[in-house]
Length: 175
Image (cartoon, rainbow, N blue to C red; front, side):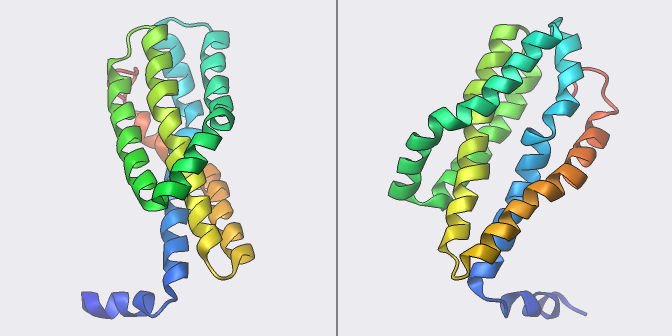
């Protein structure tokens, strides 16, 4: 079986459902790495930076609260430019944030990188933008259900894979 034969059934699908598949995969990746995957980073961050668990928990809690604060701005940008540029910018920014994460050496830089780069990008590109795409599909009920199921799959699969990928490295610098 050659490659064109493999993609033929996918190309026969309604375009909207292909987009739902793409944004669901994005939600699985983002949810597994950021929303549920933060537990994988909790102990390495605490130990490497010499933080208390309360300090680390505060940073992760503020990251969740940040989504509520930035939502009006993200909503305006999504209305103005659409979900595609937001997803591209957010994915790039989140990747840059995780690269910068390796250079974190104090609580202040941890807060700046995690809250100012990673969490900002996650909420805009991995939560709000996929929801806009799901709302644009003809059957909104099923499309919303499919996209939001991606977060459940992220909890089951992607967070575990993140833990397996991080496990060989003992500290934050190498992870």
